[in-house]
Length: 422
Image (cartoon, rainbow, N blue to C red; front, side, top):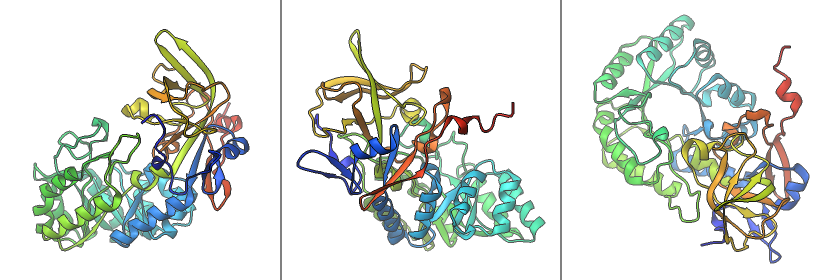
């Protein structure tokens, strides 16, 4: 299919008879004129619907994995929709608290937590802390004793299974830095230690096998590898993590969140797991709720390749460089134009790897000044953005009911100089 598949775009997307594209009741052309490019544009109603659906399926305690996309506005919305929030650093914790999220709705993750982070989490009373190593166990125990507190904890199990995803996204195999290995007996030992602890309360177990996984069977295989252990421990909570893949390209296929969660809940019930089954979805909550818009600065032919250079790049979307991720693109002023020209869409950074789309399709009419759009950029775009080459990070624009508003403003040169001391 050479035309863009509009089902990749956010839920409120509408295309008028004159081919003007609207998201949240605002057309992308007017948004680009008002807020400039590059810009991240999020469908607020789509975000809320995803959060509410996760709570409907899993119930209270299900946590949004904030590393996928975090700012005060999204933290506040997730909480208002009933979700807890999974945070893994003091920064993510602080942003969530600044948004008005109570500590009791925060889940503290991380494989190398600082004493300061754990002190704050325990003293403020987080939902629970996920233990990742024996050093982590010692730290949390020490802080609990110091504060005379009894925090609830989950033990993260590494099941030692391979999943079909990029090697950097695989977190449940035998070379992962995360969790207590099940196959060495460490998982059993740490559970016993926590159960005997006078300071910690074992709330449950946790697994996370990886990210951008497209096969439900992969998740079920991971569950099968730990169900005997989970059933034996018989804790109150079993968290299955997240990692569900989403469609980025026209031809991608991915399970829906409902299909994924239903399969997991059924399998856990069949396995005789009596505790509450929860999840920590991230990408599947936010990826398809946003698009990024850019302005074309040059279209050049160099040998057998055509390069379309835009005013963003690896500083606002490093995923193609890190994970060889693919995206689609289309012209904002003519979304359904036939895409008959094969190009590389590149950024303006001084790096050969600064490519947003490699060997992609755009209309041959593309020219300087055109605004192009890449869908499915709501996860790991803004949250992984950088100031490489001293590029200012784009704004985050939320659209809803015909209104567009920045929830994160565009950075300025003054912002980037603010931390310099000389």
